Amino acid sequence: MKKPYIPPDNKPRCRWCLSEDIYVRYHDEEWGVPEHDDQKLFAKLILDGAQAGLSWITILKKRDNYHRAFDDFDAKRMVRYSEKKIASLLNDPGIVRNRLKVRAAVLNAQAYLKLREEVGSFDQFLWQFVGGKSRRNAWRSMKQLPTRTPESDAMSKALRVRGFKFVGSTICYAFMQAVGMVNDHTTQCFRYRQV
Image 1: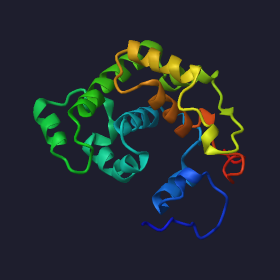
Image 2: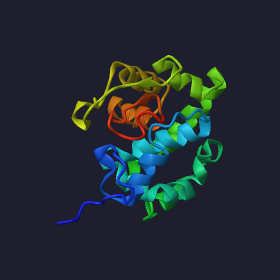
Image 3: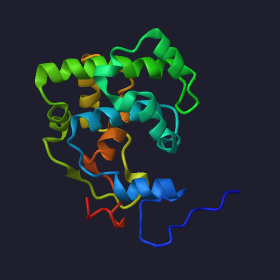
């Protein structure tokens, strides 16, 4: 049986991150921090879609490989991927080699560029679902956290209408948590008041 990871600083944290140091660093430095950069939001949406059916730690450990494999999520390059490039991605052990997810990333790049052309800002389009500002919840335990909300339902529907794939409501809610649209750190977590 694997021994639980205990961070040396003993700060109170959300329990989900207490399995490995990489998870603790992600929790402490990134999760829940408001993000407004279009390209970073696009990359995070792709990564959250890659997580479907898997645990986030699997993708987190492969995140650098994803950035390398997908040209740092440069959508203009991704839309030009040939069948040869897609085949090479499907043979890349550094990423999750799922044909639907790889093809979805390319389709999402097309949808992302079209959306930006039409509305100007991916950031504004996404953040409209929380009224443009981060929402602070007050969960005492991880059991209270929802896996989807009316806002994530609306975001999912709006993205799917625009041609995005792997953007179900649960994926959208995980994305909203990660990019700080909602503050879902538990109230006992030291990051709750910081983000």
